Each structure stands twice: as structure tokens, then as C-alpha cells.
Length: 213
Image (tube, rainbow, N blue to C red; front, side, top):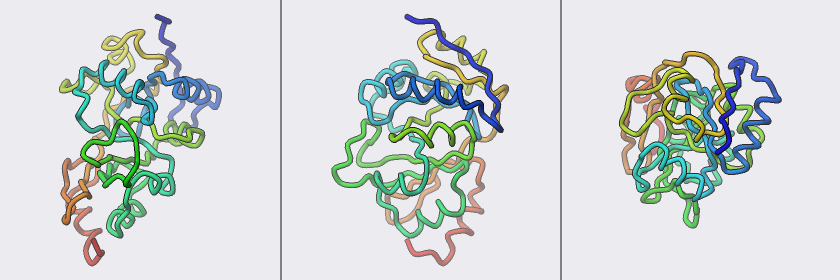
């Protein structure tokens, strides 16, 4: 097992060479820890069954549980899921940002992160994630950097203590303890706020007034 690489990164103006190193590892199917606008995330190829299994094994997470993915933009989201008027409205208002939209996957879409034809999608406002996604032609996982069911790790030191050299590269953006993303299930006849986070429930409900489902 190779020794994990830890790189300090400027969250506001990420160093291109560090971003390139992270992308190389993602392309190779390895796992990357990177700062998002909320917490640290565990990133790997969401289109690779082996990579997703490796990540779930590391997190001690059941393989049949859903996990969100990062995409680079709304156009990329269209390739994977059905975007209703209300989904498009929320996406245009709050993305990029701390919002996860659970949407119905398109018929025939084959991603190992899809469960019951549902997929959670995020467009991050983190400059680090944005730069990574600009050069990744595939979605990457957007799951928290901790063991399943445990408290969030807020520093790279804590995350490294948990996962050690089983992670390929850690991008250290300092202490991160922001509110988690708001999660909305958009797959039913009515939108359901699955988890209230950085965007308040009232803000979401106000934004949806008068918008077709």
C-alpha cells in the first residue's frame, strides 16, 4: 500500500498542480479527500462499481444505501436524471451551493450509486470541487469523510487518523465545520425535504410558490 499524500490547498484559489494530482487519482479510480463548501468529502468515480465499492467498504456503509454525487453543471445533471420544472427552478436558484437534489434517474442510466432509480446530485460552490469537476467527464461521489453513522470529521488530521493510507490523497483546506447541505427528494408527486441544512425549509418552500411540479 502506497503512503497517502497530504497537500495543503488554498480553498479560495486552488493550486492547479494540486487539482491535477487529485484528478489523476480520480481517473485511476482512487479515493480523494477534498474540502467542499460544507464539510470534507470523499470523492471517487461514481461511474465505477469497483471504486464505489471500495469507498463504501472504507466507510463501512451498506452497498445498497444511496449516496450523492457531484456534477460540474446543470447540463451534466441532465445526462443522468429527469429534471422537472421545480427541480430546474431550485437548481437555478441555489446551485452551485449546499443543496442536494434527489432526482429520478433516466431510464437506462447505469451508475452504481443509483438506488431504486434515485440519484442524489450536487453542484458544489467550493472552488476546489468546481475546479476538479471542470476536468472530470464523470460524476464523483459526494459523501462525508467519516465512518458511516459516526460524527463528522472536521480536520484532515481527524480524517487521516480514521482512514490512513487507504486514501490516495488528502487535500487539506483547514478546519471545516459548516452546516451540511439541504437534501430534497424530488422523485415523488410532492417534493420532500429529507434533511434541512444550510438552506432553510422556509426558503425552499417560498422559492417553490407558484412553480409547476
